[in-house]
Length: 427
Image: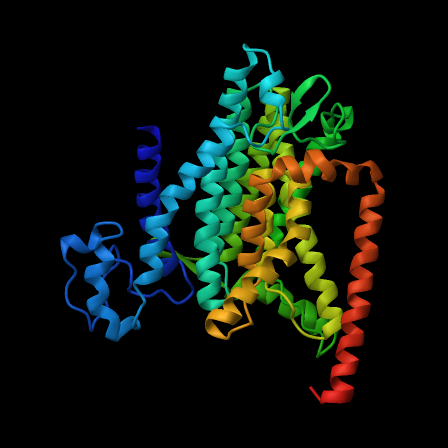
């Protein structure tokens, strides 16, 4: 009955995913049965809103939306429920995120606590998977990732960290992927794997958390920097783009984006300080884990975007990938986000190859690769972290130096690629 209930909830969530894919896109389309129909279509029937089966009736709109437009949304609703049920079996029943044999060696009194912890993690991962599905298919359709997905998801993840830590104070940061220590189970924290350094509980930790949140809010603004007409004009254009022109529709009201971002920043900053001063140490560490995940997750993609542009002389990656990776880091923590970043190129090989064989298209957005890598990191976390990944963090501060060297090397290789391409192919 538990698995049946999860599958039914997943089917309903699949219908929500389809509605969001067609409604939150930059160019909304009247495909979901929960949206108003296209002007050229017949009125929707009540049976059209039945998950999975309703798409068989909506095939009558094939002349408007395409011959097999109904197949993908039907498969999403059909498969998302079993995917959620499988994830529940793996995380909660099998305790698959923990090291092999950890459950067998665990005292009987510890098992209910571990399952409760895994249940909280499962709910967070199920929410992340829902948002990743929406982002993936919007990115496939139009090569954009809407802020409605990534900004909302990041804020939800940060709030869930605090709620989960209050529910499980003995664990610390229940939504971050776990690792094992000699003393038992612990959450993914900063020195890894070791006791939490005092500086993260001190005011320095509060400053770091507030700074990351402020930079994240600023990164969402319109930050166009145009130097063609000199520094003075560049500053003028930057201020105009940041404060004057970009607006969005919020309900019935059209507001300037910067005012909404300032409101989010102020409310978030107050909330972060309230958690630090007013709640438990475990709640603060849980929130800070999510914030550092936002900083490293989004920061590494942002750095790749900047260095790749320097090397290629053109945009190489959209900013939606930055906000998507920041959301992933908010959910699963900064160490896991680092592995997602390095796993994404391997998922890209598989996805691009499949797309090329099936459709002949080999130009695909990067967001789906990140989403696939994030879920693979969650499912195979024991192998990724406990078997070989934790050794990477023995390098400590040198990790930053290694990443910087890799960025500089990537920039040089891309510049060389551009020179060769222009020299021999004239492009």
